[in-house]
Length: 360
Image 1 (tube, rainbow, N blue to C red):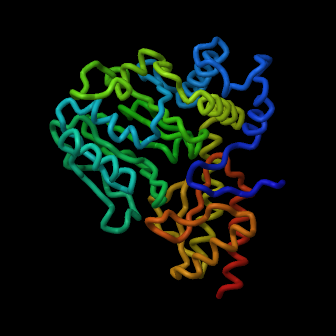
Image 2: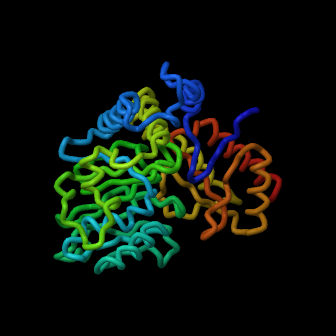
Image 3: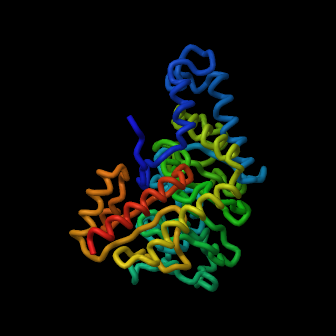
């Protein structure tokens, strides 16, 4: 069976050689006589897997020693509560709302304290990133929160907000490891791995150690305390062991590809092919202002809902899967994460050209 080009926003395409390696090790992981799926998370073999994964991630992102790396469960959405529970010491936090996930995080934070919406792009259907150079940061805010890349709307912060000395908390689920970043600019960076790094079920949290304390909001469950997980090195309870194992393989793959600089170049090249076509097309158009376009998620429309539906149906038949836009916005969306080959984007553009000719 031939593989299709999978443009899903997540769970998403993974590198083929990673899948092949995992398949080869499925029945017998390196002479252990069992699959990683069946292995005790307390075993020496598994301990090597999780420690190597962390070391490789630290190397890829140049994570300093004063930052903790945690492999957790509950997806990015559980972090919407976990962050205020652990970090809202003054019960005040500032949120920049640039899409559905930032909005959900902002709403969740209101349960735990005063969440201030200090900037938003909801007035234009989240099609741009607001100017964040001089925001009304609350003097007593515990942190400033962003969703750095908006999976649904296809926008990306090209410049981080001026937080005026407050800690920056960023959900990077859909741009994780897509380009080099300076971790020291963040108090917390976290992301669900199911877009760029691995299978659904793992969330990676990278956090300044100074933010991990016993001082949490009353009523915070044991399982939702960062200190519990940090002290236990992500092994407080049974971790999502197989998912972490796949993440570890993806880290090795990124290293082999040349690291994050090479990933950025690869991603820019892919995105340019698609955006260049959208900019000159007479049928299709992108929905995001040019300067805020994501390299990972590219939403586009024809302007006609019936034609959009026809495109989704015919593209699927042509081996281009999961191009339907998010249910909240409609249209189409191509998610072109790290593991999407350039050939996949070229195939998409060729199909779009053909569709345009046939539907003038």
